[in-house]
Amino acid sequence: MSFCKRSLMIIILLLFCSNTFAVSFRCKTGKFVQTSDSKSDVIKNCGQPISKSLHKQKVWDGHRYRSQTCQIWVYKPNKYQYFRHVYLCNNRVIKIEKGRRN
Image 1 (cartoon, helix red, strand yellow):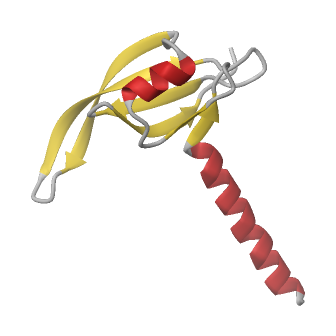
Image 2: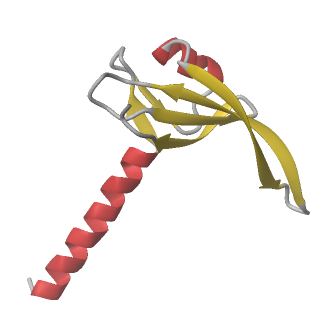
């Protein structure tokens, strides 16, 4: 296999792996939370978050953008991991972001 093909395969693999970690995380209980999970699934798997806040977001409804209020729940999986910010809209997880460690 040529150097270019091998390099391209490695880049694709890295992009795929980084995308996987952006859509899920493991709770203290050992269970996973991922995008499209319901609010009740998140509570069942991880318990109550350490904080909650509201976030306004523009959403395309097929005809126009409309403003929607979503929640941001913050979890700290363990003392060695980063905070996880779980975005919930319409009682579903739409995004998970990694925060800082403190």
